[in-house]
Length: 319
Image (cartoon, rainbow, N blue to C red; front, side):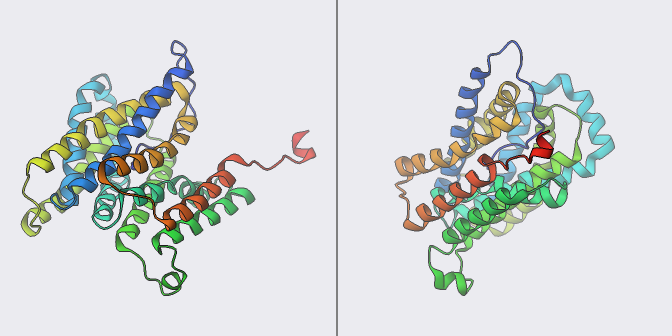
């Protein structure tokens, strides 16, 4: 999950003392733990309200990671003093809204479908980067974005052309689409902001900011949502979301970025979709629908067009 997951920074060189291959186990485990977040949230959705899950996951993950980045506390405090509103805004978009929407969506749709839709976020990031950062989009990226969008529409309309024409969509899947958009916007905003501190301390600040924004929503749930009581299942799910699926996942992603570089590490995000499908089948008894397979095929095709195919340089430019 963004899922998943943390902002993309500029490509970083691999740490000299650690072979690049050492980053792959950390990245694979990171996305496996991230996939488990979908399973835990789906499992406990009938008993635990979405904003409660969001607030406690962010707050506890921040508390767990805060001592680990103790050497950066001075830089973190200085950044908060100078750019606190930006930190809160980015944390609200990328962590509070992104995760809250996922948890809302999982109450009304399969974890497998949610994982497939979230795979669309890197393509959304490319499109937003064109308008926010002025990054070139190009023919292949544009075509890939259009094909991936067609896949997303096939999923949210359940492959029903009539439903698509009448704009009748599953509300849960629309929540997941909104989450994917928030993650893409978050990624672009972090690139533009250039906060100037290392990735893990920045993530800790954003986790804290996200928890702060989620708190009023959670307080509203306490007074209005019958699921607000913490029971055994809720505590067990929360323990996973904050620990292995939260703090440890963020730490592993940071390690994989250090060894593999941000671009290579972030491309492994697509493993999350596969892991979600496998875990949902084994633990929740879910199976892929025809519209999931159709939409996934379009999204994969769009990803290939947008990220793998490169325009050939003209002779003048090559010279």
